[in-house]
Image (cartoon, rainbow, N blue to C red; front, top):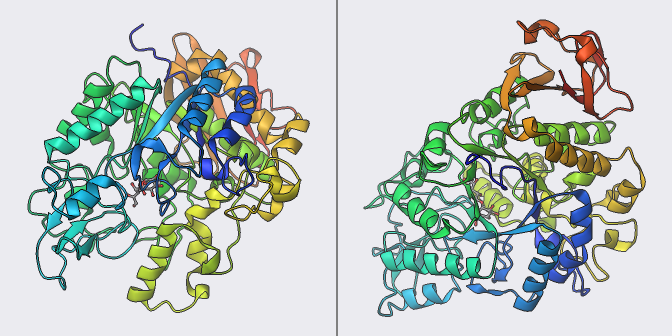
Length: 562
Ligand code: ISL
């Protein structure tokens, strides 16, 4: 069947190498550390590892600022270590997907160094605009706060950086830039990688003349540089380079509506395999985006369902989904969407049920399989994340913030550092992450929440993830079945069916800390026959055997065959 493919049937596990496992005691997670955990990954049952950037980098944005695409950063090890990791994964039938960051490079990349000196052939590798050093070329803002332009004294011109000042944007209008990217994609494919997660693809194409953006936009300029005039052409070139290589492609494309997303996906579109949309990452933002001082907003379940549905229903027959709830840029999922106190186990397993039974390839972020939680930050000195630091600086300039207390609610809600605390392996010093001093402090709760403890208990979050991953592998309807939402307006029950041919599954999630019932009329006209219901999974000892006439307990989740 041409519609089937290995990456649709896979569960992906995302590794943030810096925080995963340190093998040499320097406090920074590394490639050998990951290889040491290859059996761990295999036992969890995942199929693909997406490895966040491990390339040579000054690490100002933890590797998303690449200095050399063909070298491994010494902090993470050597190319031989990378090859050993690849082989250890492949030996276990786990595939390896690399992060491809080609919207920008590090300012220390040789291309930028040559470009700022206007060396022949490199003049137009980046977006340069001449003009007075007092006045940036337009009003675009960086995602990390402040103007998206910096003035370079060496060249005497402005350069564009949608992210940090040390992350200049590549000029994709220049065919030599695109050739360079094509070459490096081929180079990694020849090293036997199984695909790419492609960072920040939607802003690749900047409109000629760099027109001003709407000054009231969340990020000023976004309507100019997101999904820009030549984006489809650039994406096609990337797809062309990866095609015929059995590679998985997943593009990160925030701010892309479902119709635009569909146009980039599959054989009827540009041909990308799947893409990460981010609308559901903003349901709890303030009115003016995530760093709005009045935020964060409330998490409202019916709104969340509507937003999820835009991709779940909206891509039906038009493209394959990439399903995620958390990653290295987001708060911890149990703290954000569940309850990291009394119902931590129940809500973490409810979220696992959700993630692993939706339509699309699920992405599990490291640590979520043991229900890791947010940290608590008490001052800006505890923050490492460039986005948080930039956002607080912008708030200070604009909104007159003058103490941490004014922004503590935002930082403690949104900081990307929550997801970057080291992986909690055991109750030993530094959670068994390192023998040295960790680059970022381990969450205080590691004695309570760690892999060793989770694995020793059958009713743990970890074992639940393992079982649900196995269920997904064994159940075609969970992969290829049609998704239909039930009860769109129910304030606390999230329920849906997955149907493939004659097989039908029902997923019921009580997304609250109070008991709730699932009303059967929702599934008319075909009423469910209690006698035919079989429970496939549940996060309490015994799930209700008749979903229609039972109360679901706090954060109870169950999967039925009906
Ligand atoms: O648009 C956004 C902010 O409103 C983001 O979703 C943006 O697309 C996202 O931050 C891109 O993230 C990726 O690229 C960044 C890096 O810092 C992140 O860690 C990475 O996931 C720059 O390379």
